[in-house]
Length: 234
Image (tube, rainbow, N blue to C red; front, side, top):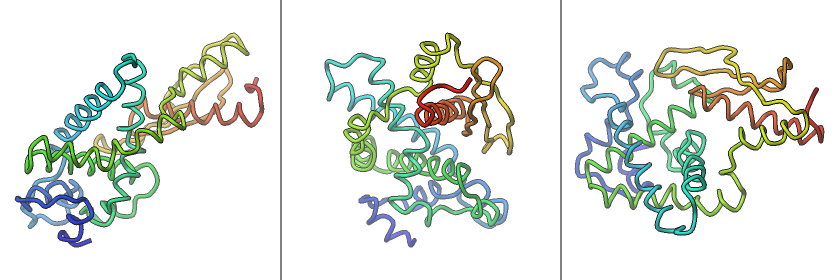
């Protein structure tokens, strides 16, 4: 996607095109294109992550004055996790705009989702630097906060690990245990495979770019099994 078209899609016109280019430059691209003088997007991702969390926190705090901290934390987590952000990123065309090495461009599944989510956070960081907080807030509210009601309506913010623990303790009188089964990839894109156990039995496996993400995915898979079986596996 051309830069002009991309800026129309995201409804923001950059004063500094270099910031947009940096936001869309994955570190792998520089390995194959040493002539590219733009920095990779990791610093912007760091900044954008903080801005995103602040905007969402502010929105939840103001919109739901009667809700407790725990509820707001769970809803925010559902809005800013890499799965949601990757979906938003695809929707605005980052998948076709981000600059990747040939190898990274072939990645599929969770590895690609993480790249897209990170690029989206980098874009937030770039907009914040280019247009300050007001512009970043408008962008986030347009593409992320707009999903808030859907997440709440469909209970997507419910903590899968807590729900699994509640069900398993009530049925089996044991607490689910999570173990790292494997970890693959370099530090900047490591993927963890996590197993969830009921006693000594491995019930389900999940994966994610952090141990926490892998545990949540494993818990969701275990809940799906319980739902299909109508009882925990023993």
